[in-house]
Length: 256
Ligand SMILES: NC(=O)c1ccc[n+]([C@@H]2O[C@H](COP(=O)([O-])OP(=O)(O)OC[C@H]3O[C@@H](n4cnc5c(N)ncnc54)[C@H](O)[C@@H]3O)[C@@H](O)[C@H]2O)c1
Image: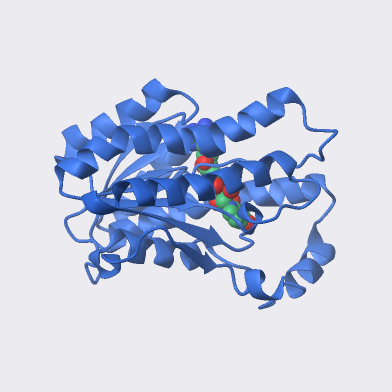
């Protein structure tokens, strides 16, 4: 433990699995008290156990980011449990595949509700507490699809593009208040949900390994690849950094 975020309080949504769990564990490893905010309770408690077993500090807050009251309650819990809030990481996200004509209104609302409205609610309720600390850090987890989506990721790409613009808009709104708002773009991470979505598309086994080999660095990326970028943005090391995007995606934005 090197204490890069020692003494800070951080909320991580979607911390029950995959990239969010990796981020929560790294923040705790670096000294933060972490609120593990997740819709799935069992997974959230598992993340808390992993953090505590490693000597870190964490609590679980059952959170459905689609619901404003749930987001407000999670922020309130962070403040009551740990005395304030310094960092918010919006990582909860869903990525069901669907082309334009296959995207139902229900799917559109669910994807936009989770991936954009959720971060909006979390930011809205976190901001007063970040202000009370004299500033803080918001990190939104985007995607390469924030810039240009695949044909079968229409709603997802729209949601992540909107999240990028929300990031820049809030960075602009809160510069004078020292609330820094940035985005991290993970690469292709084989989280359980990503693997099950890929399996539904028939991308498994050798075909999946070949697809990984075709990525720019020919490696399977891990939650920590994005997690270390989040630690930097949550820490005072990035005190002068706001409104920016860190590509932690192994060259995907350069090579494609
Ligand atoms: N896996 C990738 O290749 C990849 C690439 C780029 C960006 N991302 C982004 O990273 C983030 C995490 O992806 P992941 O692959 O780790 O996914 P994941 O499914 O493993 O993790 C997402 C977590 O969010 C939780 N969640 C979903 N809806 C929620 C809601 N309404 N309220 C609260 N929690 C909710 C889930 O329970 C889950 O624990 C997402 O925003 C995703 O878009 C993933």
